[in-house]
Image (tube, rainbow, N blue to C red; front, side, top):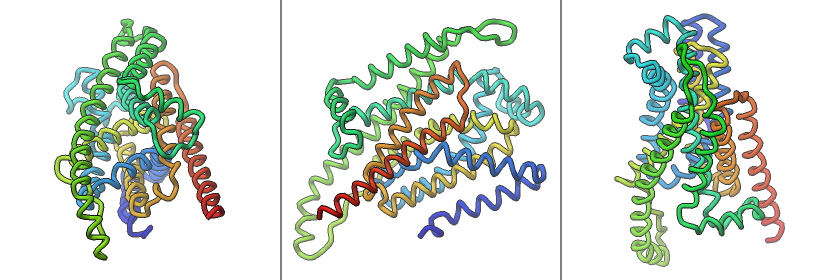
Length: 366
């Protein structure tokens, strides 16, 4: 099962490392390997969150996520996205941005760094909304009960998550964005950039998340109508099956997953510049990492890991909240990618260990 699920990731790894050697020798081989490890360590929480959504989708859409989705993730976010950011921020044509990335790598890196406040604000707000909507919802299973119970009660207030997110954005713009920085010989105030990009992230979350939620509710009503038929089939000795997301519901959920993956990839793309400013090596290394994250997502779904280890999803959402805060702080201050990755690993590892202890306690009491 493990080999079958990860076979494409292994194949892409072999091809990517070989391409790195052909491109720039053994030094490139090492850089590609480091970038792949960076992407995997920063995106493990992404795999857990994706698995929670993907398990609701049909086998067809799971395959789409692993094929078409990986093309979007690798070529869209790891190759095209940095070029588009440079093209917009420097007011260049896409072709000129590509030429700059290949011929003047230092200048290309500087332009991506200049665009970081808007990237961080957009991604930070999108991820913060995911965390808030999770933590402010009353759930049957609670990991940190003393914290989650009062927050779930607060979550009954309409639009509270949006209000908290907007307050966080305002504080970020005032605290981090109000510092002017030098750009082309003139001083530029980042506050307006941070506000606009953050609101863009919030709107994106509400539109994509709202549409996927709307169609998911329609599916749930369909499930309720079919529940009686399934129960009758089970009583007659036939196994009933859960209705998986299909059609428009699955499409918008797929779209939501791609936007979610894009938000997660911001820190990896920006962090990659601390290792190399070669866009080709970045695309290869981060692409290998993205393939492992996709394969891990499918593995978690097929193994039913989230059902067996019930606190994993909680740990991943806390890691999302931490990443959202880190992205907003990096508008002004640089934070080492190792710290970002370790926070996610520690939170998910703690949630996994808590799940194991819970399973042992249940087994002992039964």
